[in-house]
Image (cartoon, rainbow over all chains, first blue to last red; front, side, top):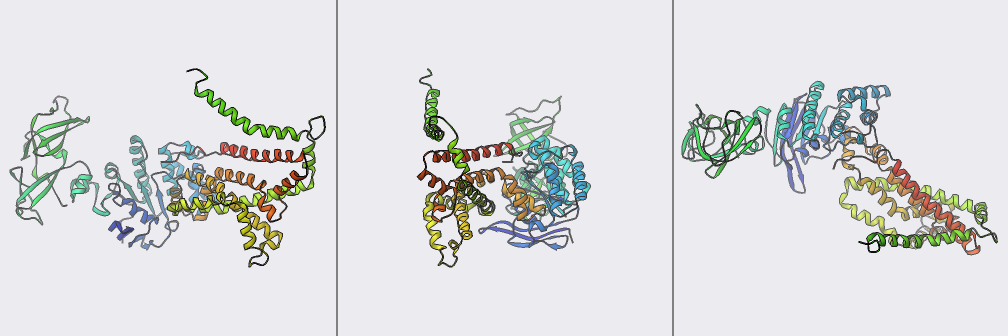
Length: 353
Length: 267
């Protein structure tokens, strides 16, 4: 049995279902991200695990124990909030000691744990400061240490990096992941930032309209999106509409050209329309050996992003984005240029709705 | 633009008018209180008043009533305001309206209500004993101070992210009582003190409750002196004003001394 088991979880607010049939099994020490746009239900699921919301149906088991009927202060779960939530009337050390005092630990144990936590977040010198005397990044590190000080069974992180500026966000996410690996604590991380989810997680749950659309490793989520939503939400995607000509061989008609995926199309038959996803990095400008898929169009705009140049090409009624590496010796195309976009049909992803 | 036409001119006019309006009666009262001895200024009226055993007894009684009212008010208002913010945010306007009712309903109505409800022939004959009447006094004063205490505490709570702080503390194992005592109360202490000083100022000079419930408070004493003496009431008025100002000054002081008032809350 998995360490955290969420089964058939459901949450209704005044007749409106915000979480529907949510299932998840998390192994001990795993780092799982809930990824999705605002209102997709990811925070609601997290809050149900924490005990701040009561499920309308379903069960949550932590370490084989059903916790649905336990109060938040009985679950032994550490939580870090987007708003830091440090107690303003307490110093950093007092914040770290709070949970330990509530648990009735001895003075010596509290003192040593506080020092251990300050060392963990590399803020040994700032124990006597008040939260308002710290930067946002430092406050969030203290919040993390405070949650870890009580040695929780499970760590929940509710968009902990959203309030920080970009540079701090990157360094802090690396620090959080390093601490999580060091302590081997089972962690659920809620974010709407795909880069955070992809870079930090062992597995990602992509959520959409209260349901888990896909569960997989960052590699699987990015490279094998199962739904149109996952494909469009994680990374940039071009969606091409084709008509199936032979489901057995995976052949389809795209802009008047017959192409083949090289694999059969399950659940589809000849004449069905098919949604195909193409990542910008899988498409090329100009003819390339092995890339038999071809589309003609005109360059709409060119964005120079440093190491990568993103070119948007108008093909028929749709616009395709494609990325090419910057080559100092080769000038990028200009808007209005007529170009050929090529791709390998096998790299197209078939999307379900 | 000339000085005469500028906004500054009219601001000075308004300020001067305000100062004269408020200060002249006080200066006049103070000056009169110093004229007890013929032909010279002295603090004789203050000496007589402060040496009067009835002054000491009634003042001490009212101070005790004020302190008890503050304790009851804090115990009633802080958990209520906290709970309303945490669990019943939609009910805030209703609760606010209820707390403002003492400003609309005269104290005399409340006290007659008390006398009718708790007289010696009632189920709970509180007016039958001094102790019982003191309980009624504290209850009445708590009601009178409610608009000030509730607003002060609610304003203090507004500066906190009450929900997130509560959830953070709960996730660390704390129950609601611990959260109230260790987190909410210390963070709204300045607001509570503001409410407490206002309560103190109201209770010290209150007349209607004490007079109609026949208790030896400072308000009826002031009225008694005012009806029978010439210079001492003026001295008493100055003393009462000084107490109120002292309370206001202390409110400002604690606000400045609060260590963590510069809390940067996430918005």
